[in-house]
Length: 238
Image (cartoon, rainbow, N blue to C red; front, side, top):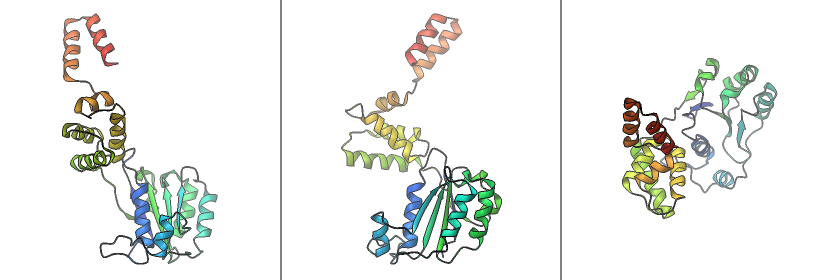
């Protein structure tokens, strides 16, 4: 059974939680789910979601709608039943941005929502969400992806986009992304802009990495007290 309140914390600046949250909302509203829990993609609810015509999945940006008035308006609207789906889903993005009064206004509805309403609270600052809200939600944390998973995805993207990338370059991008698919794809896009085969050197130059030789040269210049050589190495880095 799906909980009425779901909290989805993600890693700040690493994972985009909007897409998986929207996919989960589609699973919830689907009339005919497959055995693996995925939406069928063919029922009326799925079609309206895919076409972007549904009014049963609503997303609110708490960063710009953080007042108690905005939340009271939301709470007034939850009484209306869904038009085409089984549930009405309210996704509150960056929920930690709500004011104290707005959280208090949301609390009562979150405790006793109508049977047709599900709340999904997304945040990158879960420690700023009041304990009264946390205690009334089922929590699913989004963690950083393993480097090997990101590496495999990068190779798949390169195959689809006809990019030529070697294994060392894919591994380096995956490590630099620190578990974030969005950061990995952004760096891949930057590397592909140079044209030609994407190698580890291409990634290093695009990411502004410093080789070990430069560090040794700087260490030697400092050890010898050679200011001129030190400044030359700094100039080469920038």
